[in-house]
Image 1 (cartoon, rainbow, N blue to C red):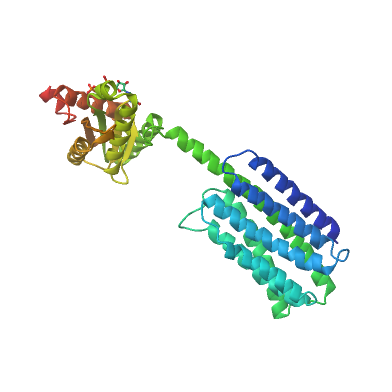
Image 2: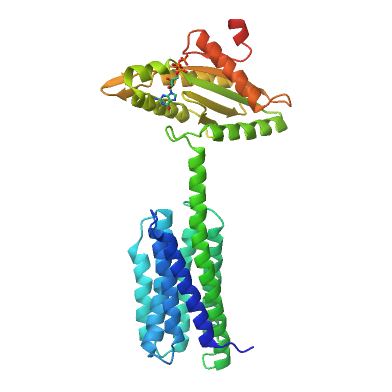
Length: 389
Ligand SMILES: Nc1nc2c(ncn2[C@@H]2O[C@H](COP(=O)(O)OP(=O)(O)OP(=O)(O)O)[C@@H](O)[C@H]2O)c(=O)[nH]1
């Protein structure tokens, strides 16, 4: 089926302009929208380069060939800029600007040499797309989510087809003078450009949505004051830890931590000082846990600590280390140093079908109240509380 080239160019151009418009609408009035704005510019640049290619023969070769390819190179440079912004990486102007200057210079130099132009485009543009792929697939700062795979697909397909075309020219199985072969390649290139524009537009928007969703999920699960997991999040973690430990018959120890006489801190120093103490205690506790342990703010001045795969004796030793750490860490406030202590209830055993999240919390809570009854600033363990009490 013969494809009408001007129609193809028109369709890709319209799609790219529409994408640019919608990305701009998304960015409008949003905080931290620099990456989206530069992505709208990417889409615009794709559209403009298509307009210039599409008018080949109507406008001068300088405009359609030199400027058209220069603007395409600019689109790839702006993609890189947007991804750097998205990832919070400092932009590197040389990596962006140099390929654009090279594109303008080389296309101007070889304006009449079609073969060389194809080879230039087939090395320069895939190299730029390679830089884009490098950011998308970086292990050091991974771009998370499915949106990036849309971008990876677009960049990989476009880069590969440009590279193949250049290889064809270089190895001689694509003849510059063969109008039919060129026509087929041109049509295929425009269709691939369409796939790329759609993948780039949707992919980046989706990446932003995924990030926003992840941020609001994290916010919903974080305690605003201390930055720890909030009650809902730590209970979710407890439920999954209990399920896992029950399935595998493993140990799970739980600590209930409560600040002693916290009401007095508020009464003597004010509520804000109380908040500062809560933050300090949270930080002291969290900084002494292992990577696999979890901590959350369970209530006002209560924290729940989960210690997977930890025997009761180990949990008790850790609880005492936490108690001592809090006792020796002061909160500076208004020229004073506020000191607090904690009481800790420990519950730990290999889990069986009889255990539930609620039963573990109730047991750790009982032990913690026993520690309070026995004078505070101490650790009590399930099983000991009845003898001591
Ligand atoms: N500043 C501040 N205070 C809080 C917050 N949440 C709870 N509180 C206070 O924590 C205090 C808890 O007091 P109590 O339950 O009587 O316990 P306590 O004074 O620590 O006494 P014991 O636990 O028996 O040692 C109350 O005064 C609450 O108002 C908070 O987010 N910020």
